[in-house]
Figure 1 (cartoon, rainbow, N blue to C red):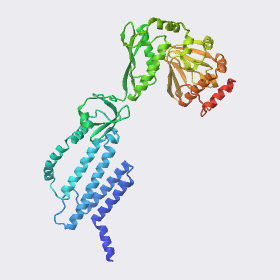
Figure 2: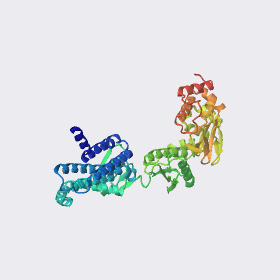
Figure 3: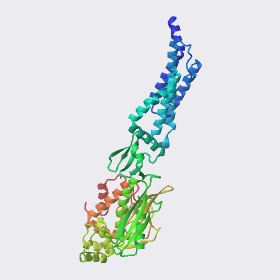
Figure 4: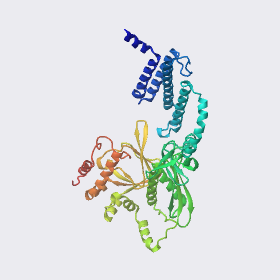
Length: 506
């Protein structure tokens, strides 16, 4: 009977009740609900409220100094209950900060301000425990610790400089995680982490550059990712002035229109920078979605410049400091290229027909038909079967596909590109429409003219099959066929089918 009374008395003890509630709350919130921040915060608030009600019910006020008339045993356990309450109060506030106080939704590596707030919460909880549990005058403690703070500050002057510089940088936000910055001394890279002492950059060589925050606070920098992620770029093209500058500028506008990697807004531009007897120098300016796309966009534009310049019969000028070749060494080749018929020059420029002999190229060129299309004209409609190989001579084309009520851009065609191989080879309709973005010149090779050539040159059929297979896999162009004809088909099976349809040797 005595044991039962003792056990029930222990259960009625407020300190035992508070300790039990604190242990249950810690297990539930710190272990069971750890992966779920929102539910963890709700659990912390619930157990904190329950602990507060329990202590107030037993006349234990956590934020007041305990009664001096209490016994030593009561003082110890009341102090323990208060410490538990203040710890739970700090945890609840920290949980609220981690869930709701997220500055611009930055990742964990950039939440220095959040860590500072959490540190202040722990400091406040510690001072509250000192004041209300141990009845120690906090003001005297702060005044006494000032001397130690001065000594510690002098010893850690460099570290504290980095810390406060990091706080200033986070408040001013000249950059954030993921931004690409360039310092005045030439160091550049993408910001991958900011902490109390330093900022980490990942440069173009994939090396980690660690810079002290105090250094970044003093040096000037350029944020290439602000005010938005888009990035401007320029490149210069020099063209031999065999035609008017306005014609060259229009051609460069077509080049920019032909690019699929640059942004349409703000509108890209082409401006003549200089004109002399040697060259017309044109500067192309454009923007890309992210600085990481600047390199691929420049590569694409350089390729388009070469193809459009060649298609227009123009010549790229030599650099200013390059020595000019002797006239008698270059004139015969240039005259030969100038007087070569356009169909032959077009076949010369396409790798697909590079293996043909001169006689085969001339025979194929005589069968080619020239077609012209005005701007915004529809060359091919979605689902239409094209039974000829269509080669772009000049201009720019846009491939779009309708999916429900949406129209999706699949790619753009430039001089030297071709289409129609899906209908020519296997009789399947196009899955997209082709629209002229500029005035377009197309040379058509009919199936009747190409069939004998495929028999004599099976490698051309293999190249066309490879192009068709690649476009089906990537779905980047309107030439990817739909249905089950090619889906899942291998390159070898596609070649076998083409050779069977054209009755070519296996």
